[in-house]
Image: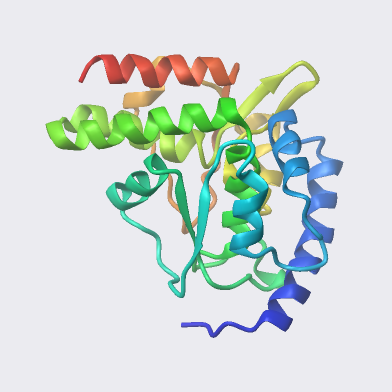
Length: 235
């Protein structure tokens, strides 16, 4: 278990931001959805943001409360989606080192903030994520394994590792790409796959211990909303 050290966290945050943001820009990978949300946060890029600051920033937009924890674990799906459905999100307690950008074996606040929070500042994304969370919890109650497989695909292969087609080209949609050098692998065209409905039952799943190597491209956020709503309608 790593110990909290704000001075080191601030230094690591600054180094990560400077190097990784340059990579995202050089790949022309940043989505308009993410950059719009990020601009609402008002972050000082030289130091790690605090939970209270992030909560205040999102209050006028989508109203999430961010909860700083002393934990360094990945929540089970039920706990995660329960918190999301209540407009809450936990923050883990350390920032990875710059030399861990390729792979960090523990969940960290760099991923929490850079990967998820800019998207959650956008109402259309937040509404989609609320629908996903509530649909997942309803599906758990029914014990429908077929629905859970499809929703897990969305949560892993699209929310964490998806790409999205925009007017200026394919952009990073998955939260992982905004906190990991896996974005470089995803922007090799041979690793990109147009999303189809059949992919939901393909058995593809998110493995956080390695780079996935194939990345699905959705056409729009509306396409994802319609997909989740179709699953919800089957419950």
